[in-house]
Amino acid sequence: EVQLVESGGGLVQPGGSLRLSCAASGFTVTSTYMSWVRQAPGKGLEWVSLFYSGGNTFYADSVRGRFTISRDSSKNTLYLQMNSLRPEDTAVYYCARDFESRDPLTGYYAHYFDYWGQGTLVTVSS
Amino acid sequence: EIVLTQSPATLSLSPGERATLSCRASQTVRRYLAWYQQKPGQAPRLLIYDASKRAAGIPARFSGSGSGTDFTLTISSLEPEDFAVYYCQQRDNWPPITFGQGTRLEIK
Image (cartoon, rainbow over all chains, first blue to last red; front, side, top):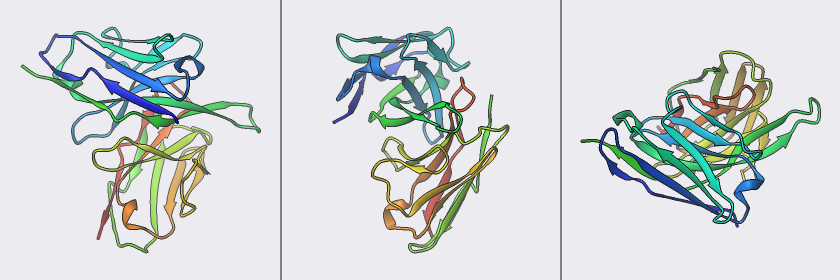
């Protein structure tokens, strides 16, 4: 059974740092793309970062240069190192696994989030 | 960046009625669009991918259609557990991966 369990959230002052973890089971994090998606209180979903299975990483403009996504294959865990935190980073942070769908007409491989963790709340406030 | 605009923002219907939710993209995403359902305090759940394919375990009352810039999620006959927030998401042109702002489906 696929499971994703996030941890590491909490209250931090503006300018501070946190590291979120996402422990995976039922699959290996190196076998697919993995993302972090956040949701500010009462707001919609915002993609934050993605770790490509080949090792490339991608970031939303709002976090580039401050957040770093990484993974540890030995622990089967995805991480999000968050530095220089701002009040607008306050949100529930979800990790999500991609699954791949190949379009037989175009040959394009689209990816969608098929499994999500339960989320961990990050609050940035003085 | 592809912007996804969902309408309406809120939809008020009764159980047993048909729900039609819309998602419009600022440029073509071909058919690479997904729909997610989110209930309060829960993570989103994948309902539809590639515009019209149901994800595993999703009831047949959920269907998706559309291509290019205009997409629709239809729930043929609402069950009490279907009242939630629904998001569309595109995976054609990324990064960034973008979501619509959501449609809240509430009980009338």
